[in-house]
Image (cartoon, rainbow, N blue to C red; front, side, top):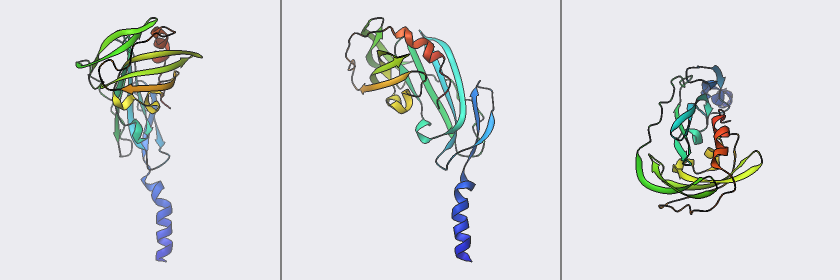
Length: 206
């Protein structure tokens, strides 16, 4: 009898401890529908994606859903003309992802300097801000056309897991490095302004 109770307990445990979270891919005020997370490894989260072009905010999305631990972080990718910040708030109780994530405040230069691409060259220099502690170089495919982008990035963002989620861009090779101007200057085949429309239109991480 005790063995039977133990077996049922093991079978029912994952179901009992799976969280329910709000799911919404819309404005920062929407609560969304209730969704049961697929496994115990997920948390309830709110992720905020804000995109700035020449310092002006052009997009701001809050996404509520079940999220994996790899998405419970924050960081910035700053390509000079275009800057995208991803911040998150994760919690571990049912339907706890109600409140929006505060707007990031990371505009203070931190002394780090990197190259970024402007037009046909990647010789422009920029002052990194906030927690942007690395220089980044990446190959981005937009509509079948490849281009090189360079700039500053937070260490949390230097992976395909995070940067590749900024759809509909497809990020290929990513290289992050420490040290001022370590992402050496070079030419690029396309204008960085091609990134504006894809980044502005990106509202979904999954």
